Length: 238
Image (tube, rainbow, N blue to C red; front, top):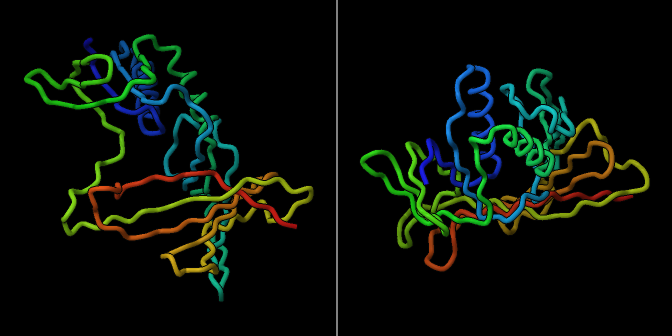
């Protein structure tokens, strides 16, 4: 198979790029290039949420489920509140984002999503690149690889920082936290296992509470050093 572009991974980065390629082609009045997205998952489901400060416009504004212009960072002694009207903090559930991105791409037959298929190798060729998958080899002019970077070789001096998220989503019968001022980091918790903080972002109901821990780990042959353990977590206590 031949394509203009191959995108390895159809998560937030890969789908965002495919949507931008499609929309830019439409705005410029030129044919959409042939794009193949290769995604190992068999389906897209709500597997995480994204929160970020908005600095640029993007085509997923309708996927934003809440935005905050004020936020709090706390420790045992202080709890300052800061904010920005110009750069709000926004929350996007992954399932809403996936549905919007895939719905946009459905209008462009030149862009194909291949689920349940993993990329095994990416190689440069005289005419571009070739992508080796579980099913076939795809030839392309350019390849965008959105997969996580590989772990450093064992025995080196490089040290990665790992961020671990864990928690729950719970609904309470009555409001508990201020829905207009999320706590982005609360360091008034046990720090014995590394830098640890709690986060509570509540739009209305339920509240989302997560525990974040950062650890330092050297590369080793039996454990990857770049690990993403993301879960939307929430807690409401009365």
